[in-house]
Length: 143
Image (cartoon, rainbow, N blue to C red; front, side, top):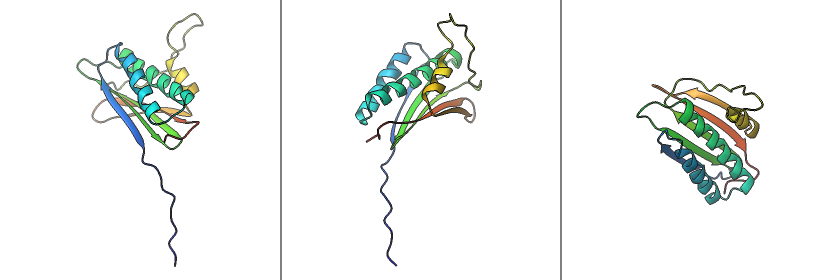
């Protein structure tokens, strides 16, 4: 009986980095994620969306999940046309979308992430902390 050849899948592309919970680190998150996505051959629109999602989730980690002496981690994994963004922080408090008024300049980060991503959620880490994640389908395959 002849064996069937399965299609070869490309290994996942993964980038991760830890950051101190300082607002200045959010700009570094954006630069590093953009660099990784560009190196993977992702198009400009996909890169911009992933960078924005990472920026919003990193901002939330800094502003709402800061624990003294604890870093947060950003991880981006691309497999084919699927991209998973994960931001791990030391807080057990679940993410909660705000309801800002029309004039507010802040408070729409999770709404923006939900609008850009195909799915979002969070899970708890052991022994403490959580990971907030967003998954999106890329317009082009990560090479």
